[in-house]
Length: 398
Ligand SMILES: *Cc1c(COP(=O)(O)O)cnc(C)c1O
Image (cartoon, rainbow, N blue to C red; front, side, top):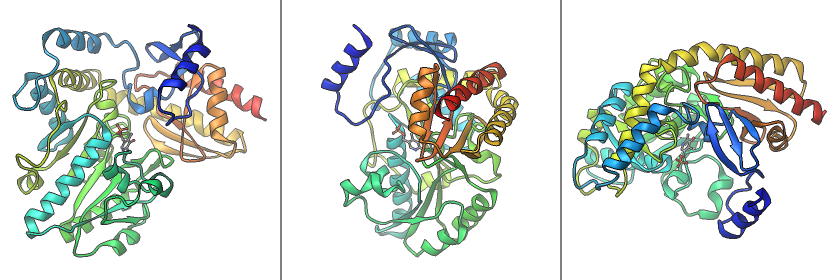
C-alpha cells in the first residue's frame, strides 16, 4: 500500500486524538528509522525519550524473544522470575526499597498518588489529603494524572477532576511553601520538566522542597518518567542533586519499547502505604516486561550508558549553543544530559515537520521549544548530522 493509502486508512479507523506527522514508520536500525517508502531518518526523538538503545539492539531483542517462547504472562496472583530480577536491578539503581510495576507512565503516577494518600491516611487516621503539583507540569492523561498536570487546557474539558490538588510555580520555593497546609500529603514534580518545555529543577528548589517535606512530614514524589533511565547522565536525574525522593515514578525508557512503568518508594513510606486489596493490575510486571526491564538495566550498567551520556552531552550542548548564537530566532538552550530544549521563535511545529523532509525526526515541547531527546547511544557524528540537517531547515525558513 502507498504511504497515503496507509494514512487515509488510519484516519478512518483510529480515533483522531493526534495530529500525526505525515510519515509511516516501518523499521529501525541503530539511531535511524525508515518509513514505508524506504526513506531514512536520523532519530532525535527516540519514540519520546523511550528508545535509549535506539533500534535493533541484539541482546535486548534476543532476551525478549527467549521470554516470549518461555512465558509471557501469568497475572500477579503468582510470582515470576524475570520481574524479581528486574525489581532487584531497579531498586539497586534507584536506592529505593519497594517497587510496583505498571503498564504506563500515567499509571505509575496514579500509583504514586494512591501511595501518598494511603500513607497520610494511615498516619493521620483520616482521609482528605491534598497534593501540591507544579504549573506547566505533565504527568499523563488518565484522570488522576491529569488532575496533577499543570496545563489547564488539557484539564478543562474533563473537570471535575480529582479534588485536593494545588498548583505552585516550578523552581519557586516560596510559591510551594504558600500552598502547604495541614492536609498536604505530597509535593509532586518532574525533576526535569519535559512536555512543559525542558526545565531542569534548580538545586536550590530541590533542596528547599526536600527540607519543607522533612519539616512537615510531606512526601516528595519525583516524576522521572522522561528524565530518568540515564538520560540526564545519572540513572535518575534526582541523583545529580544530593536529595532523595520518598516516592518516584519511571516509565518510557524503563522498557525501551515494551509498555511498562513503575512507582517506587522507601520502606518508611511502604510501611504505612498500600496493602493487599489497595492496588493491582492484570498485566503489570508480567514475565515479558520483566525480561525487558531486567535486560535494559543490565545493558545500561554493562555499557556504562550514564558515562557515555556524560561524555557526549557537552558536545551536543556546545553544538546547540552555537546554533543559538548563530540564529537570532533561537533564544535559549536548556536541559541536562541528552534531554535538551532550544527555545525557538519560529513555529516549532513547522520546524519539526520540515525536519522530516530533511530526514530528521525531531519533536517539540511546550509551544516554543525544539526538544532534543535522542537515543542515548548517539555519537558525535550523529550530533553533527543533526545540526547539519537542522541548519538546512532553518535556511529554508529564513
Ligand atoms: C510521558 C510522561 C508521562 C506519562 O507517561 P505515559 O506512559 O504516556 O502514560 C508522565 N510523566 C512524564 C514526565 C512524562 O514525560
